[in-house]
Length: 211
Image 1 (cartoon, rainbow, N blue to C red):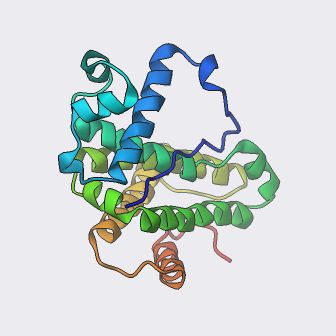
Image 2 (spheres, helix red, strand yellow):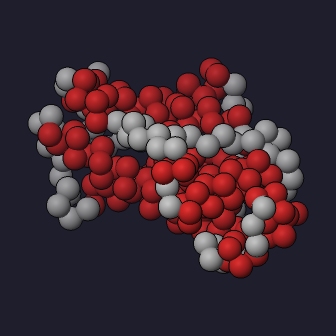
Image 3 (tube, rainbow, N blue to C red):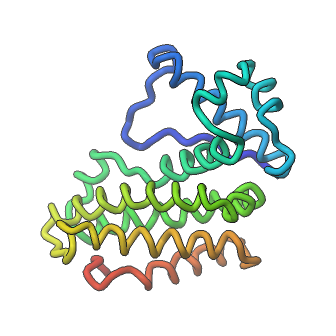
């Protein structure tokens, strides 16, 4: 198994660890350790003691952030997904029109599939975790809200924006499809991933800008 690499957010903020509060530095360090460990062993064999040993922290510090290994693992992988899903404001501004902007978000879906394929064992384990599923839906829900807001600014009419229905429907479908794929034995070569991304794109709402 290989280790899911931490991804910096595309917000353009790459603040050095030394500029962050101690609690945040500890969180980042522990999540890095958890990602590394998930690339080496099954989730069921990973213990709080092992995480603390690798991170050089006390168990009390770990439990100040997470209640158990599953919670830390869910954060570790959803952080990577969030980093890939984020699109910075400069890229959004440079897109110019609704279709070009929509294409940016579609490209992140293929990047996510490539990440899942590269570290499939780790993600497959977490696909069975209800906590991971909830965090995935929450994170994608936030990203869907940002994407819809950006599309609306280009003139796209999106029903259900104010009520949150549009973001919930968009992110809920993507999350469900993601978990389904992770649990499956679907092939994950480059051509296969492109085909899967196209299938996901075909399920986007009618208001989604298309070529």
